[in-house]
Length: 488
Image 1: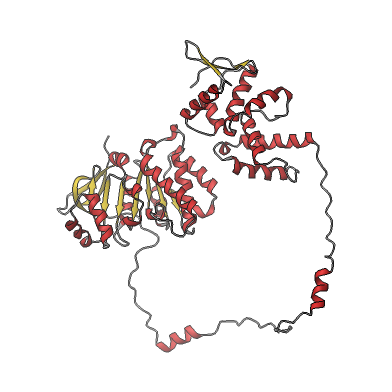
Image 2 (image 1 turned 180 degrees about the horizontal axis):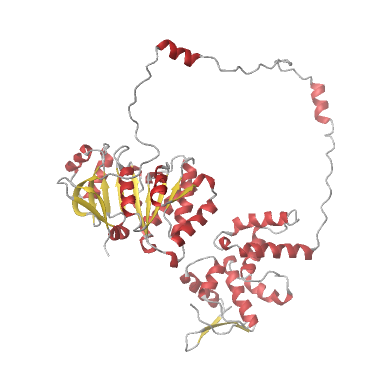
């Protein structure tokens, strides 16, 4: 079924429509100077396609939050949430196909880039069963995919640019159709802009922006002068979702409005000049009370003997706190095991790096009464890998030989190895590729297959696949073998 979005009319007054299904497959770039009507164009497209497809709006100025009342968009005020919460919200939106406006109003430029990167990355990394079609509209895209670093940290710029590149380059297979709008094509990263196949070019005056716009539209340089003459709200359109040849489109009216509109002339006050002067220079209603100066404002010169005496005088004794009773090794191991169970049970922890989880581990240990965990990051990573495999007591003598073998592998492979070892020891079915992927911290089954092949090349695994396609794994040095089960 073809869904057409009415965008306005051409020079002859004929309606100009946009093929929504084609747009989802080919993406859109909107360009125009401030005041050319970009936000009006985006609002028209969002209003006319509401109810037909999920809409995700990255809104730096909070102009599109008014869509909520008319069309039911969820408004997320980014300043009220952490990056982790923003990523969780994005995952829920992907799952439930709710339209949303992510308002970045109130955040500084670096905060906006951090938030947008976390949000877009979570949309991109959603599970395959949640890859529903969605329009992802990014206003002022040059803020999130700049050509140069500017004043933000380099890691923030890279994260934001990577998220925007994934949206425009690889988002189509995940159902994400990028619609980006920018004031300056010259400030927008070329690898982001180049992935769009549909273009709506509004009024612009700088030669470098006109040249890039003309190149994208397939126009000669001398024809680019016409871009300067476009009226506000009028755009040159080209692309498989709109027209195979450049046409002029006057964008139609919209039903909602932004919270901040264009400035309008209003009459100046008619009060006499004398009255205005009295209002401006009038004293405050209540003068703040002046505190009496009871000290000498001039700094006193401290004699050398007095200064030395102050330095040498012993510090006053601090009240001693009750000593924290030492815990036995068994109690410490029990706390470690309980904390690791809580971390592993957290669904969001699977994709978080060990360095971040280590901070969470330290906080949880202090809350459990363990003042300073003896584990360092390397030791925590080792125990975390074992915990993800369901092994919380690595000091168990029955696991000593398995842990020795696991230590010969890279840290990130310990978890999958121990997961197989646990199943083999218990004679349980061989873990599936999906279970190994969760322990490995990835969603790529291809990486899991390469992982299993690598461990087999180290002669720690022996794989056997029977005629029915079921897989079993033997750990020859331990003499343990899993039961056969489906690998998928």
